[in-house]
Length: 456
Image (cartoon, rainbow, N blue to C red):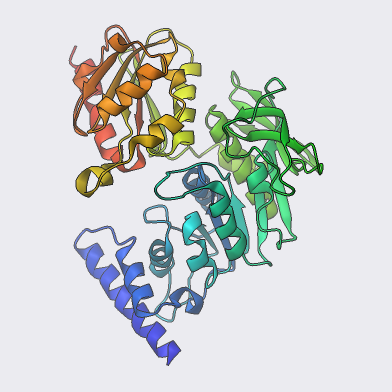
């Protein structure tokens, strides 16, 4: 009876997927949602590829998932990936459905599936990953992900003991994930280590997750990402099996060390967050058995997914687009710091960091703005800020509290337009920071700026 229900769900979902494609619709979620509705243990009955890789974590899972998919395809593997759909149960089911036969056999070599942390209990009970990658576990949207301890609890409970883990050694929360799993690989970055003696006050991790004692930091890169040790029980950040030991920004390369020696790889993006993402992807491919030379060749032909980062120049105007992940205080703060640290004396920043869904049917809680470090936006190199969206006044207030002079700030209370407020004569370096659900609106601003520059 269960098998019959599975096949009915499979064929119904396949029919809906085909119909949606004929209509030019994105069939990346609804067919999977239907399949799970008709057969709650649908994922358990699908016959997955030989290798299933789950990618999770607060920040970077989309970048790592897409990077792995591009690299594996470049190496000749056929890959199932949910890059075009959601990362919850229905989206995972839809991605596998797209490459499954009418008998329920997924016909690719590898599945690389981005999985939302909160969906882990629903996904991993039926689809057991061979490898699970965790980029980091950090403070996220206060209305969706609560506390890092809660997310860690869900993952610990959900991850099967036989799954092989690939974890960020420089995130002590992530590094201790799923103690039931014995096969563990750690990656990290030792290059350009900051000064010692940083304080953990106000961060996600202040007390030892093992004994509750006080933690001390050898150094911190951002938030609690760094090297930590407990004064009481001695718990410390694990030694990375793979680590980036040197970053050459002028040459656009990084050096990565592992047991077999060192290898130079192309630097895809010089943001420290993406340097960790690069190291993570290399660690996964190494565990899959790909040689350093093969990985290096693959990296020469890929880019960071443009929905997360893009850079163009037109007529001397430089436009950088970067996802800032609204309502995620850590991700936004890292984007702000990245802009402040870039060379140049007259930058302008256009911000689209409201929650689009909240503005359409509910009320957004603005408290996350005060959990986010806005102080990098006060850097003297940033000559202008344009806050756009219904919460632009809240953002302006938060920026002024952080020390941004009010005369540098312009407001545009809509998600659409607003690029005309940018002073492109005085500021030739433009940064557009946007929430992942406002990419279309951000691209419209970019297009308007490019047309304005071309029309001079």
